Image (cartoon, rainbow, N blue to C red):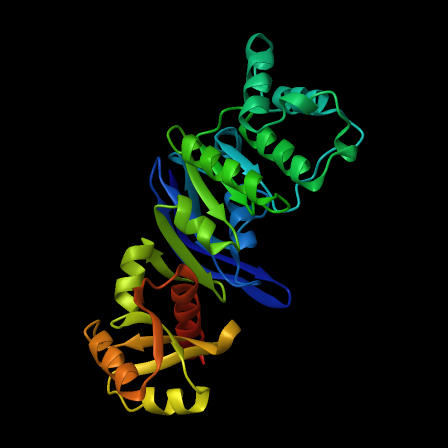
Length: 314
């Protein structure tokens, strides 16, 4: 569905995107991640035709973006992070107007508008003026706009910004449903959101793609250790000193909890080191209420990948 080949984008003061190449297959939900200023938004704007690359080729649904721009635009629904709406228009008027601009036929326009209103939770605010809506509802209007012409590809930049937790869950479920009929490229800073809905992850930093795989495979490639979590009642300095004597244990974080309990997170070379940790707690007379193995989060993996990429570029 998307094929990006050796694309570069230069601004007068910096190189925003540096010779990147990647593909997104039809029907995939792909998370597009990166630190602020890494080149995510620039890349998404180039995919939609809003910005022109200085070098390289972009294809969408088999059409070259630069020689068949209109064909590509017909197949894309784009929700930018700051969605440009007409605040003086009512929701129904705006969606009808946008559907007309996007070539939705008069015969199907009412049905299309009603459908996206229902899918995006806008049925009850169709007569409301957009400028009087909350930020969350305005974001929904932007998503409905991206969907109204039933595009093959959805490019969503921070689609849940401004939404409350209940609305975020609704949008996640909507994205899953949309994936049955659409290809989705999703950019967000909410990493649990990516793990919840995306099948594959692209990570960009300093204008270069530095990772492309499922979150599970990225975890396995980066982490040869296991993540252990322990809660004990002990004096902090004494406990940390004792734990450091166990070979194969590296302490990541230690926090004091209510009641004098210590929460300690550790990298361990083997899950069997839990036995040594338990025996140490018994020997020291520590009260032990938790000793569990955890999975590394996407946040851990994201930070590791971007830090390694930065170190290698120095």
